[in-house]
Image (cartoon, rainbow, N blue to C red; front, side, top):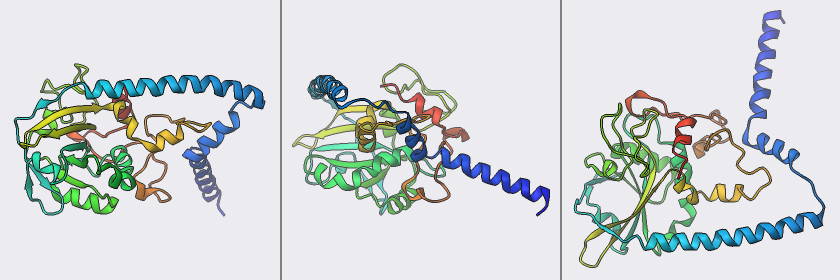
Length: 294
């Protein structure tokens, strides 16, 4: 073996070793090694103190839910127009409820025609609906809406095996009206997450969730929207990870997350987004961090 070849092999091995050490499992293993070890008596005392705090948080969460329900509802006077991903048929917002529901939950998916792929963080969240959808739809219908063309959404839905309906809002102002689509560069006055600031990072699409209700006469109302860290409650994976000694332990919000079909393949371990946002900018971990504040 030549010296040059040996050096190349050494560099490859070093890179592989560094990559292995930076995997989510390796980071968690390091955190476990550094975790505090105490006696059972000390642990039990700490656990009782934590339980008291957890009960306070649970009660506060119930209070927040009551406040949310007491917001009231706002009449939606725009019927909007959506295209179904399966057949491109046109539907109004009222029709998205289906025949059996009077409550509709809409996830605003970050995906536009100039994106290489849907936002992996949005996909991570939506993957959680696979198992719970039959339970959720006893109470409300759930759909995802994005700016991308119906054909792109059909391919995405098939690849992800999502059981819920996905619609394109490309022919309406729905995304802009509900605060998840922005001009790039900044030429509008729309703000994100009610904070009086136009979002940065050169992204035209941002994540969110909106809730609507429909009365017996067919009138539709807007009941709630949330963005940024307000979506965190939907991430059952994080709720479980938060129970572990290592916790989230991530360099940036969801920096370790991949599209589910990439785990174990060549795509595993990358930290940034793989799609292009509005204006050609690349969505990065920093962009997700920028949306973190509730």
